[in-house]
Image 1 (cartoon, helix red, strand yellow):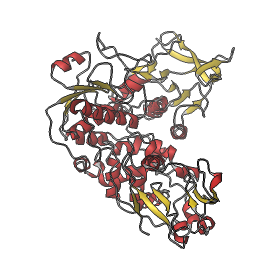
Image 2 (cartoon, helix red, strand yellow):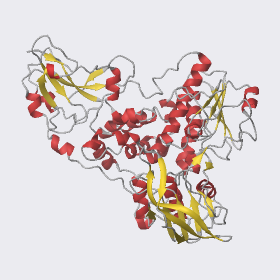
Image 3 (cartoon, rainbow, N blue to C red):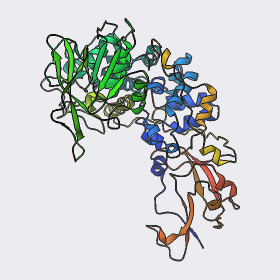
Image 4 (cartoon, helix red, strand yellow):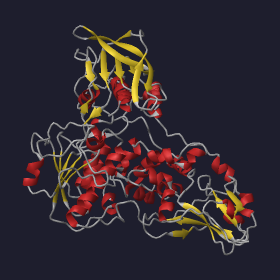
Length: 602
């Protein structure tokens, strides 16, 4: 008998797709690599890997939405690897937290200086990520920011109990130290225009001004005193202005912003600015400002809410009441709010899955309260546009080419919330980096060199010893991230405390290391079936080749099948193979480059 492979083409793209955590990350962070490095005790390597594609690793280690964790294969066994918390751990050892801002220069070496200047409007995550990459390409980026300090929604949209301000300052300072010029209190449409930027000699422009306009709720009573929109509430709280909410606050909305605002309002932190960018953020903020009772009113039930489950759980732990399937009908009061009239929600989505709420007749009731915070979404402010400026999309965002982020005006690019609407922090960072690459190509006629910045360079193979008992490897529970006790959270600078070294090693050791692959040399395989017998996950089989789609053997043959999504990389099959036909090889992510497989030592 001979040995046949499946008909699936095994090329560089296939190997890339076989590492789901990397593929899920908008900036293509090699998450499995830095997790493996932590497990092996090489924290410096872990930081370098985490930093390579992302100028904000310390920030993302605390507040990233972590799409990598949603994609993590370990989640099919029990729970996904705590990738975000492990990134934080690596940064605490070798990032700006450890006073190692100079590590940026090592991770992102600069190209020779060029003459072209590029204007970046908005010093949020998209704008600063764009400035960072342009600086590494040798350009001279100048960042214009309307507020008195940089950071955008990282400052105005994420509360300090989730993200310390000194970390934001340190990571931004490291970018500015690369030769990025920052001009604050410079607003587009007030202090300058797109035309004036061109007249000033800028070769290209990137717009990353975010989505700072609150969506309006068209119900009676929104004009009453005591009604606030979440964007203005959070901005004022963050800037340290007194916000008198009273003792009973209702937050309308089912997103993360609403929760954070509610949690902050519970805490009496007069003079301490805290903000965020979603509905639950508003509720948490309200808690922190001293409200005695905070309720979140949402159209959706708990499973339908757009807020992350973790945020909902944290809000409930802190005493915030979550009320689903209620819609705001009118705000009650004469000159000041005295209550919110709600109506029961029959359904939030129609039969096609579109957002189209329907309500139950005659279910109106009034919930008494002192103030109402509306956290129903945000949109970009495009009031600065003039004739001939960039075109807007039907959604009220800047219209862009989704591949290059180019707008309708040559040399002007846009990304982040102003182009897509409110999204995750890591998406904005990815947009800034994509725009920088497009600007480089526009100004030079060539694609930028990507080995040091794209996260796709050759990386060392890290071998982690798991022991002979694969069962213990798959039965290790996720290590909970330490957090401040509930009764001590009032006034606490940070709620999530991060892993100790021992905890980080233990959690990182749960990683399946999907960048490692079982490979077969068919010329020496004897089809003894030893690998099939020893596999603890039963993911290896020997089947007739004719049973495999796309395979038409000329004579009776058999195929050795490996189900990648079930393989835990325990390597027991490699140890069992009597002819050494099987090997455990490491994939060095290289996108379109030739396949790069490196044998992993035992």
